[in-house]
Image (tube, rainbow, N blue to C red; front, side, top):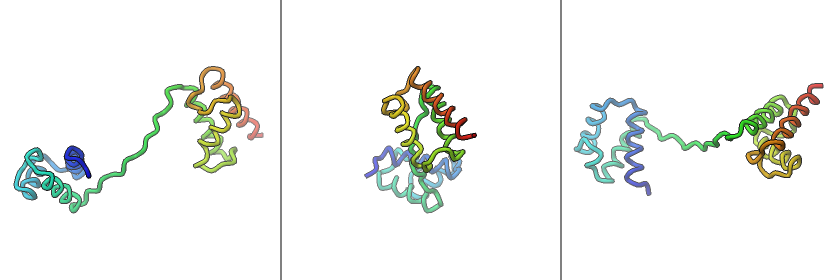
Length: 139
Protein backbone atom coordinates (compact mmCIF):
# COMPACT_ATOMS: atom_id res chain seq x y z
CA UNK A 1 0.00 0.00 0.00
CA UNK A 2 1.45 3.33 -0.98
CA UNK A 3 1.30 6.11 1.52
CA UNK A 4 -0.43 9.44 1.00
CA UNK A 5 2.90 11.25 0.79
CA UNK A 6 4.17 8.90 -1.90
CA UNK A 7 1.00 9.39 -3.92
CA UNK A 8 1.31 13.18 -3.59
CA UNK A 9 4.92 12.99 -4.72
CA UNK A 10 3.97 10.89 -7.74
CA UNK A 11 1.26 13.39 -8.68
CA UNK A 12 3.72 16.27 -8.59
CA UNK A 13 6.29 14.28 -10.57
CA UNK A 14 3.60 13.48 -13.14
CA UNK A 15 2.69 17.18 -13.33
CA UNK A 16 6.29 18.04 -14.08
CA UNK A 17 6.83 15.16 -16.54
CA UNK A 18 3.64 16.02 -18.44
CA UNK A 19 4.71 19.67 -18.59
CA UNK A 20 1.52 21.01 -17.05
CA UNK A 21 1.37 24.65 -16.08
CA UNK A 22 -0.02 25.44 -12.64
CA UNK A 23 -3.31 26.58 -14.16
CA UNK A 24 -3.64 23.41 -16.28
CA UNK A 25 -2.74 21.29 -13.27
CA UNK A 26 -5.37 22.94 -11.05
CA UNK A 27 -7.96 22.68 -13.84
CA UNK A 28 -7.21 18.96 -14.17
CA UNK A 29 -7.56 18.43 -10.42
CA UNK A 30 -10.88 20.32 -10.44
CA UNK A 31 -12.14 18.33 -13.42
CA UNK A 32 -11.18 14.94 -12.04
CA UNK A 33 -12.09 15.38 -8.36
CA UNK A 34 -14.04 18.58 -7.90
CA UNK A 35 -11.30 20.27 -5.87
CA UNK A 36 -8.21 22.12 -7.05
CA UNK A 37 -5.86 21.20 -4.19
CA UNK A 38 -4.34 17.83 -3.43
CA UNK A 39 -4.20 18.76 0.24
CA UNK A 40 -8.02 18.78 0.38
CA UNK A 41 -8.41 15.40 -1.34
CA UNK A 42 -9.07 12.00 0.11
CA UNK A 43 -6.74 9.12 -0.63
CA UNK A 44 -9.25 7.78 -3.14
CA UNK A 45 -9.32 11.13 -4.98
CA UNK A 46 -5.52 11.26 -5.07
CA UNK A 47 -5.44 7.80 -6.61
CA UNK A 48 -8.04 8.93 -9.14
CA UNK A 49 -5.82 11.88 -10.15
CA UNK A 50 -2.79 9.64 -10.46
CA UNK A 51 -4.78 7.20 -12.62
CA UNK A 52 -5.90 10.13 -14.80
CA UNK A 53 -2.28 11.19 -15.36
CA UNK A 54 -1.41 7.60 -16.28
CA UNK A 55 -4.26 7.59 -18.83
CA UNK A 56 -2.79 10.77 -20.30
CA UNK A 57 0.47 8.97 -20.94
CA UNK A 58 2.52 9.44 -17.78
CA UNK A 59 4.46 6.40 -16.68
CA UNK A 60 6.41 6.29 -13.44
CA UNK A 61 10.10 5.76 -13.98
CA UNK A 62 11.75 2.76 -12.46
CA UNK A 63 14.01 3.44 -9.52
CA UNK A 64 17.62 3.34 -10.46
CA UNK A 65 20.13 1.72 -8.25
CA UNK A 66 23.03 4.03 -7.79
CA UNK A 67 26.47 3.04 -6.65
CA UNK A 68 28.34 6.06 -5.38
CA UNK A 69 31.87 6.59 -6.60
CA UNK A 70 34.61 5.79 -4.19
CA UNK A 71 35.85 8.68 -2.10
CA UNK A 72 39.45 7.54 -2.67
CA UNK A 73 41.08 8.71 -5.91
CA UNK A 74 43.36 5.66 -5.97
CA UNK A 75 40.39 3.31 -5.88
CA UNK A 76 38.67 5.22 -8.70
CA UNK A 77 41.87 4.89 -10.72
CA UNK A 78 41.95 1.15 -10.06
CA UNK A 79 38.39 0.79 -11.36
CA UNK A 80 39.24 2.87 -14.43
CA UNK A 81 42.33 0.80 -15.20
CA UNK A 82 40.44 -2.45 -14.66
CA UNK A 83 37.53 -1.35 -16.87
CA UNK A 84 40.06 -0.27 -19.52
CA UNK A 85 41.73 -3.68 -19.38
CA UNK A 86 38.33 -5.28 -19.89
CA UNK A 87 37.34 -2.94 -22.73
CA UNK A 88 40.55 -3.70 -24.60
CA UNK A 89 39.89 -7.45 -24.30
CA UNK A 90 42.78 -8.11 -21.94
CA UNK A 91 40.64 -9.67 -19.21
CA UNK A 92 39.07 -13.07 -19.63
CA UNK A 93 35.67 -12.23 -18.13
CA UNK A 94 32.30 -10.89 -19.19
CA UNK A 95 31.12 -7.37 -18.49
CA UNK A 96 29.00 -8.62 -15.59
CA UNK A 97 31.99 -10.42 -14.07
CA UNK A 98 34.38 -7.42 -14.08
CA UNK A 99 33.75 -6.34 -10.50
CA UNK A 100 33.97 -9.89 -9.17
CA UNK A 101 37.20 -10.45 -11.10
CA UNK A 102 38.67 -7.23 -9.66
CA UNK A 103 37.62 -8.20 -6.14
CA UNK A 104 39.31 -11.59 -6.50
CA UNK A 105 42.43 -9.99 -7.98
CA UNK A 106 42.65 -7.53 -5.08
CA UNK A 107 42.11 -10.32 -2.54
CA UNK A 108 44.83 -12.43 -4.14
CA UNK A 109 47.32 -9.53 -4.32
CA UNK A 110 46.70 -7.85 -0.95
CA UNK A 111 44.50 -10.08 1.19
CA UNK A 112 41.89 -7.28 1.33
CA UNK A 113 38.34 -8.41 0.56
CA UNK A 114 37.05 -5.28 -1.17
CA UNK A 115 38.74 -2.80 -3.54
CA UNK A 116 36.92 0.03 -1.75
CA UNK A 117 39.01 -0.67 1.36
CA UNK A 118 42.36 -0.19 -0.38
CA UNK A 119 44.61 2.58 0.88
CA UNK A 120 48.21 3.68 0.53
CA UNK A 121 50.72 1.05 -0.52
CA UNK A 122 48.10 -1.62 -1.21
CA UNK A 123 46.26 0.67 -3.63
CA UNK A 124 49.53 1.64 -5.34
CA UNK A 125 50.48 -2.04 -5.68
CA UNK A 126 47.19 -2.77 -7.49
CA UNK A 127 47.58 0.29 -9.72
CA UNK A 128 51.09 -0.77 -10.72
CA UNK A 129 49.92 -4.35 -11.30
CA UNK A 130 47.14 -3.12 -13.61
CA UNK A 131 49.58 -0.93 -15.51
CA UNK A 132 51.97 -3.86 -15.86
CA UNK A 133 49.14 -6.08 -17.13
CA UNK A 134 48.29 -3.46 -19.72
CA UNK A 135 51.91 -3.19 -20.91
CA UNK A 136 52.38 -6.96 -20.91
CA UNK A 137 49.22 -7.52 -22.95
CA UNK A 138 50.19 -4.81 -25.48
CA UNK A 139 53.29 -6.72 -26.53
